[in-house]
Image (cartoon, rainbow, N blue to C red; front, side):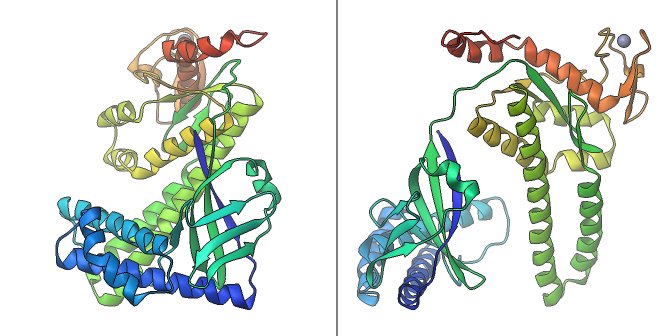
Length: 380
Ligand SMILES: [Zn+2]
């Protein structure tokens, strides 16, 4: 199953606007009340929270549909659990509270018809039908099955974030594209395309400096600034990772190839021998995120992903197979001591990963099931 979240902007007319707004506010009230109760009584069990809060909340919000009261309690339970998890890790936590908590809908409280551009939502004024326009980009998902949805209010407009799902397409594969994840280049593939990490590195270093300055100051306004800074950095990294993973998967689709990636755990092991700065970058969640993005975009597009052993991939010559530490002249250059082959070091590593992907048992097994259904067996 592949899942995708569609962000639909809802058309406004004054009556539905009022109903949605009122629903959002009352839902938020319920969410905050359950969080407050759970926090004060150190309670995170869904059933017990329900027993303790359902009746009083129904009395306080008689117009809010019962399913939404339940949904607010479920969301609050999740929030309380995640706060408890953070506390366990030794981080400072406060009672979860929200200004505007997105209303979570499920099959009992809403339906959506993507082709018709129409959603029916349970609100404080009963069911309301809200139109929207499915943009061209989303039309490919028009036949997918809608699951849950979140009603959000942002920048003066209501949005419905609908999760849709479909069976993953049959993987097609006529070869392998090796991908080396690195620092100087975020990713380099075995065709010689590289996706630069330079911009990410510059921004991250700048933000790190700023952050340590603010941390030293420690005032209230510095803390607020810090919070903003963190959000900004994570948006930047997320966007870059989306761009890189999208581009990689697109070239795999166009050339009908599988993606061969190195295991990040092994990538971390490799970093033991490199500089502190490299280790710091490699231990970063941004790299895990890039791999996740590649994995889910590949699955949605029917591109198989194989994880291959990256050991010595940066020291081995992709032409003659000679493996030596001396082959790697610097971070960026590869020069084979045996056959004289010279190339960008990341590219050389990507070609090695491609070769390992081609001989990988995992890929052969994955394709064995599909090969019998195809007129032409994949060439590996
Ligand atoms: Zn060589």
